[in-house]
Amino acid sequence: MAWLSISIETDCRHAEALADALLEAGALSACIEDADAGTDRETPQFGEPGSVTTPGWERSRVIALLESETDTSALIAACAPIAGLDQTPSFTQETVAEQNWVQLTQSQFDPIRVSERLWIVPSWHQAPDPDAIILVLDPGMAFGTGSHPTTRLCLEWLEQSVTPGISILDYGCGSGILAIAAAKLGASNVLGVDIDLQAVSAATSNAERNAVSARFADSAMDLKGQFDIVVANILSNPLKALAPAICAHVRPGGKLALSGILAEQTEELIASYAPYLPLSVADTRDGWVCLAGIKSKA
Image (tube, rainbow, N blue to C red; front, side):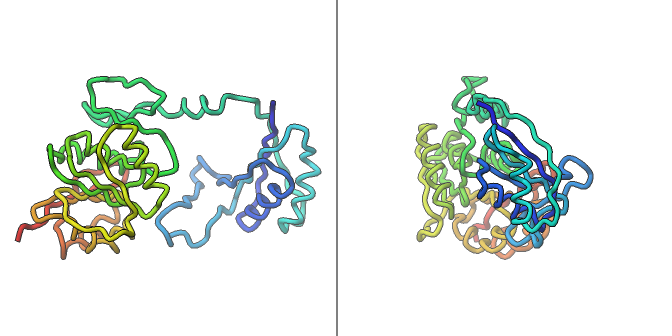
């Protein structure tokens, strides 16, 4: 079986309405992309909550998937006025052949070597080094597959910092990758919390798959206790707002690591945490920063 993929260029004022109209008219799927993606005019749209004030791209591209027998010209002519367009926009189309979509998706995710002894391996791959510490993790609903620089920074910091028997709190655990890594590196009391219940569920499943003893819970619960290590890989705005709460869970003499921080946000984050715990730059990668520090015993 084959399908038709159509691509229509429009602007941010009409793109969403056009995508909705195509779906209402029977399109199997519809998405909006930056028509200038891959050029020097590409415009980023993703950042921290509240940072995008005018969502959408001035030159947008609506891409829709249709049944193969669809009269594309008639469909677009019917949807254009519904979307508020005065004229029927031009479009291109191509045939999408039947494929093994699962196999195609899996082929895009290869094992990731974090360090000499730490690998992240999707479940459909063999471990490249069976003697290494293997984190079995598939792409899914929760953030944290190991490919993002912030996750790599935290994993590398954990590898250097975790010692057998310590306790660790992963604040904003996502997929659970950091908590699972800590458990495999020897931590014995591992807790991950997240505001997203899907993340909690995904992290629990990932811990079971990796045969590690790590607990995961809703961060809205009454979280108590202090830990030898606290790690938080989220975004700078929530990191700033949560500074007192996060630092309260670091035991005196314990360590804290933060990531999800852009290089230009470094000084602001350090200042936000200064009343509770001194931080400095532990490492950087691709414009992202990992901050770390030790809580005073006084």
